[in-house]
Every structure is written in C-alpha cells, then in structure tokens.
Image (cartoon, rainbow over the protein chains, first blue to last red):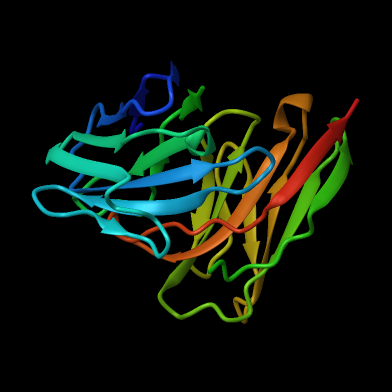
Length: 116
Length: 111
C-alpha cells in the first residue's frame, strides 16, 4: 500500500532557529500533499495544501511566512518552521494521495517539534 | 469546518463488537464517508470509506443509512490495540481534496 514517510520524527531546537520537516511519498507520486498540526489532546488542524510546482494554499489564520512550504518534486514536500518559538511546539503531520486519482489519503507518522 | 457529529467517547469490552456512530446530515451527493483512527502519538490510519453502499474490509465494516445522513463503523472483535480516537469525515474523493478532522470518538477497549 501507499507509504508516506516523515523526517525527522522528533526534533528539539532553540527559540529563533528554523526547522525543516520532510514529507515523502515512498511508492507513489503526489502532486498534492497536506500539512496538519496537532496540539495535545486536540484534533488535527489543517495548515496548508502543498502543490507541486506552485505555491501552497494556506488555511485561514496560518501564517505563510512562518510556515514555509515547498513541494519541489512529485514525491517530496517540506515544511519549514521559521524563527521558531515555544508556542510552535506541536505534532506536525503530512498526508498525500496518489495523483492518479486515489480516494484515500495516507498519513505520515508525524514529527514532534519541541522549541526550547 | 467538520461536517460530522460523533460521541466524544465510548467503551467496549475486549472481544465484543464496537459500533461507532456518526451523523453527517448535510452530506452532499458526491461526498464519501471516511473513517480514520489515531493511536496516541501516531499519524492517522485509514480504516474504510464508502459512498452509499455498505463496505467491509479486513479491519472493519461501514454501514451507511439509505438517506446517507448517518453511518456506523463496526469493529467486529475489538482488541486492546483498537483503543484510539476514531474520526468520521465526509469528503469529496480524489487526491487533491482535503480531509477536515472533527473531534472524533475516543474508543477505550476494556480488558
């Protein structure tokens, strides 16, 4: 079945630094990937839709300059949290579906970011 | 915004069937009903989806009412490893359409 890989699974950084999280579709091509964040005991919140070869589409209230998304190829999207602050500490999860029309989106295992 | 309503929590005895309800009274004709689950600190796992017919796979069965305004996910023989938050989501199919999560149902399987 379709596999989505995220890296790193855990990252700790200092305030003010930037952190990059990768999302890869391992055995399929994905023109669209989705990024979510999740706070403890809360549901997943969609942050943005990542589009291969074009700009990402951000959900209302999500700062595009804070959360930079790049979808450089059909198998890779990256989320960069810029100038991270402790309130950016969260669980970040990506998902993707096969471009050829799959109805099912597969999720990565998630990346836990802790900003000190 | 999520367009489904689920009970916040349910209990089920190990080995018994778990029946998780979901209301989606405003579902559109081209929207599927999807079920995902999330075990603590992991990414969501796809379970099953359907449009209007009942569906069954190796994990679960999905029963959709004739008017499509509600559905039930059935785990036939729940195990402790089925303890998770279960999300019912309505969504237009296709790889480019987003999934919007509601609050889900926390299913606790008891020994």
